[in-house]
Amino acid sequence: MHDVQPEPIAAAIPKPRGRAIVITSGKGGVGKTTTTANIGAALARTGASVVLVDADVGLRNLDIVMGLEARVRHHVLDVLESRASLDDALVTDKRVSSLRLLAAAQTREKDDVDTQAMHDLVNTLRERFDYVLIDCPAGIEMGFQNAIVGADEAIVVCTPEVSAVRDADRVVGLLGNREKIWLVVNRLRPALVRKGKMLSVDDVNAILRLPLLGVIADEPGVIVSTNKGEPLALDDANPTGAAYRAIAGRIAGTDTSAPVIPTEPSAMQRLGAFFGGSAR
Amino acid sequence: MIDFFKKIFKPEGSSTTARERLRLVLLSDHLSLAPDVVESLKLDLIAVISKYVEVDEAACDVTFERQDSAIAMLANIPILAMKTRPPSPPPAPSAPPPAPEPPPSFGTPATAKVAEEPAAAKPPSAPRRKRRRRRPAVAASLGSAAPAPG
Image (cartoon, one colour):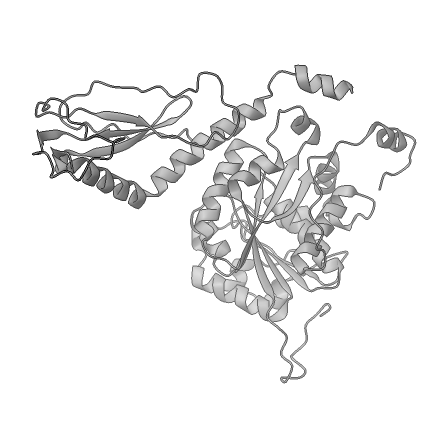
């Protein structure tokens, strides 16, 4: 289940097909790519083999968030159009050996992708990996259709904003009958929720009514991590990283605890952090 | 303790506004995404009203209009003639057939507010008001409720 998947050794014990999960939102800029990178890193850290597919053709970003932009030689359209083999196009992560990235084409357009070929590609990847995570582009047009075609599970990322919830609601309708559709509430600001200036997780999910996979706070660490290209999920000391790891655990079924809604750090914790003590 | 007092005296945050806007925008989204539901609602309405009066089915029009704090259903159902009084079953005391003067042969539009469960404490302006509009005789297409641009 680790690293490179060799030829099937024993045909008698075929590897169970991996799970294909699309990360989508409808609205742009809510954190799909960051969520994909972190969930992927967190799943791979537990030893599962994971491939991240950037389906945002024309606006490649997942490689940047993963810090792998310098290693990308071929992209998903090279594979779909047989200019490169799948193995040549898969980029191995710097930190976690069981994590791979299949980058999007930067100089092409979403309509260039053949939906059936994309479906076949996801199926091929599912033969080789435990998890195929597909980073969906914003919108609900062709790029969206291509991203969701091979996935039988979906994670809807939504921020506590009217526009994001509305778009998420639309996307849930378009996803139709999937095996599972989860919700990740991203960029929550507990202090604003307390002051009644931001929709709460309950407000969001009163509309969407999806199983809640996790809640990610809007905190500087997320920005710092994308600056560096290092997913927070690999940072043991970071509480947001822990939240991503918990999400991964819930996807894998190893974590059955209810998601923790981030709260404001207490005065004591702030004091502790000020004096260098790490509040987890 | 301080929090407690803050909670009592704090002005209502904008999240209330956000919740209310979200509720309305989704309601209108869902209505426009479910033309079959609207169509079947229209047919049912016509069927019920036809029990009492003769309506011009071809000119019937049911639309939804976005207002500030609610979504209103506008049913424009032109009435052609009064029906001969139905062979009424022993009338339930609560529901006498609405049989005023035979109306003239042009439509009297009925406007009804769609009642929704109050998701949150509504502002005091919420109490249901019956709104009645004067409309031209022919069922005018009202133009569907235009949701705010995404």
